[in-house]
Image (tube, rainbow, N blue to C red):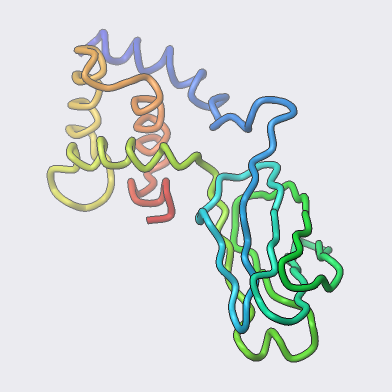
Length: 183
C-alpha cells in the first residue's frame, strides 16, 4: 500500500500538467461539410478541440453559404454555387457550436446543425471503455477500491500510461467516467 501512495503522489503533480495535446504545430484537421436542400452533413462529429479547416461543398442545386457561431464572433463563407467548395478556418474550444446556412430562409427550412467539440481526442473513447470495466458498482465513478485495481493493472502493464493518467484525473476530480468523451 505504501508504494501506491508514493506512486500516486509522484504522478499527481504530473497529471495536473497533463492535458490532451493539440495537433502538432502546423497541423490542422480538415472536416468536410456538405450543404444541400435542406440540410447540412458534417463528418466526423464530435471533433477534438483545436484548429479545424472546414471544407464546405455545395451539393445542392442552388446557392448556399456556411456559418459557424463562435464566442463573440462568427465565421462564414460567401454564397457559392452548386458544386463549388469554400474553406473556413477556426480554432475551436470544447463546447457546442451552431452551424447553419445564412442565406435568408435556408436556416428556417432545416439547414442548421450542432457541432460538438470535445476536450479529448476521439481515441479517448477507447480509454473510457477500458476504464468502464473497473466500475464494479456501476455508478460511473472510480471509487477508491476501483482506482486501486486500476493502479494494480497499470503496475502489471495491463493499462497504458494515457489511460492510467486519465483514471487519476477522474478519480481525483470525482468526475464520471462517461464525462470524458461526452458520452
